[in-house]
Image 1 (cartoon, rainbow over the protein chains, first blue to last red):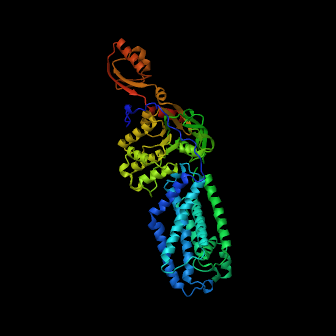
Image 2 (image 1 turned 90 degrees about the vertical axis):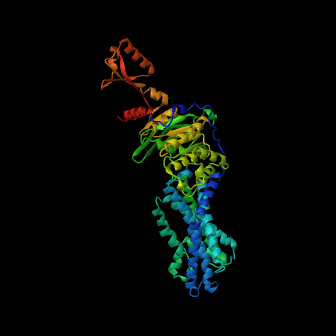
Image 3 (image 1 turned 120 degrees about the vertical axis):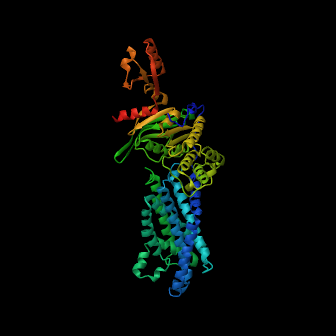
Length: 281
Length: 304
């Protein structure tokens, strides 16, 4: 026998048995959540140049180009705020939304493609813990990028915050929606192409047609009406209200729409996780 | 749980699982006691990985129950998973983290927050101490395999499933790995092993289950399976044979005659017959039955 194991290695009958790990209390969000949330944050922070700095710089370029080209020609809110000031909250929110989506979706699809998802499927982590950790990590990244955009644009166009509650509420709600949507997209996608479909045909069009760069009152009536079916419009409009106290629709309506989508997408994502859709056989 | 020591480490009852066009497991029942070093053998597609996936909660059985240390893998899945460590067959890793971070994060998933000393010990035994702060991407295949072993052990589970743990690991490191695993077994951990190196299973495992096409075709102690292989084979070169042994002669090639004996006691009888008949044995070769022969015989018998 060409075994690497010699006769001397023959296993002795064990004299003891290992202590079983006894039944443990199951908090709603236990150590599995904390560890996965920490891992999700550490994951994007390790490549912060790509996940935080790059989107901040890209957004700054948007600001410089659009504000330079359209300043003085595009009138918003009847001229009560300058175009540059108008643009900044929209760009911040766009960065928050896109990066929140990117975080959960890219983390999941990479884990699936590299098969390392098994590391979170084997431990005693509940569906709710996985959901909260991925969405929480996405919110942190989205808010980091948003904060970065705001800070870096301050020297160019100081944008003051009139109603911090609305700013925080819409930043948190919007990033939660996009983190959850990213989670759904990541679970559903079986390859990077599928995720690109989500990004290019859903996220990008809805973001660019949501009023980031313009007030919907400057649109023809048909497109104005259509904009009201775009949930991104409410996130950005409500967020902008926090800066100026001015918006295209009531911030309460916007908050209602945001909350509705938070709940709806959370139910979908939780259902996918609980049934193991495309995760467990 | 009634009493920890009376509860089987793994208890599968009538577990079945089908995939489109394939019956992966067919009413498999299996009980592994605490402290056993148990081998799960079978050809590719026999259902070993499906069975392990059901234990690990990665796959849900169509019917039947699976329990780890008395905890059902569906209704008590959190407690079941706390008691189980799995080394997956696929060589997978998270490229964002170092070896130490990988182990620390995995420990925290199980609620083990102060695992530094144990992680150091794991790294030492798996010969990874020097690579503790290296990114996972920088490791060779064998090193990544060892990190997978470390990840399965980091929460000190009483039941450890090793699905082909030594694939791609060189001979010296395999030896280190087995020494470590055997130590865990001596300390009471239940080990369930699948391997293509059947000699490893034969040398270490106290009990063996052989799977074929989703069914258990043999389940016994390693010793009994080997005994069932009719003991030893003998090749004898002699001028003639004792009359009482002529009918037992199996092969005759280049002057040598082969016999299959039940064991060394029967060999003694055979030699005595040669002495009594005054026949001189010119040359004799002994061969022992091994688990590989048992494996081939049992799996091919079922296939026939």
